[in-house]
Length: 74
Image (cartoon, rainbow, N blue to C red; front, side, top):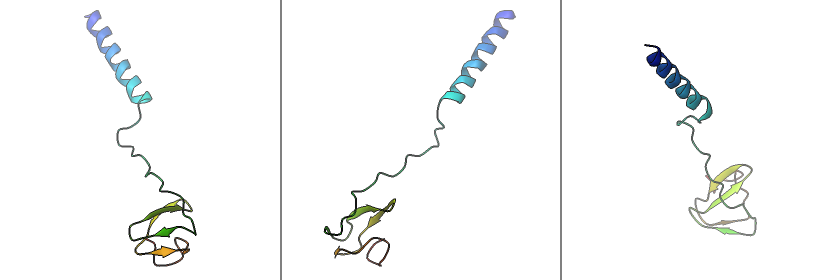
C-alpha cells in the first residue's frame, strides 16, 4: 500500500512539473516579418513589405506610397 501511494505521489509531482515548465500547446508563433518597406522599391500585386510593425501586401503595382496611407496596401 505504501509503495502505491509513493508511486501515485511521484506521478502527480512529475505531471505538475511538466505543466509548470512546459509552454502551453495552444500558444501560436508570431507571423514572420516581411522585408522592410523601401520608398524606392517597386512592389507588384501580392508583394509584401513590413512597415510600422505590420506586414502589408500590395494590391497592385506601386512605388513610393507608404503602407497604410493609401488604398494600394492591404
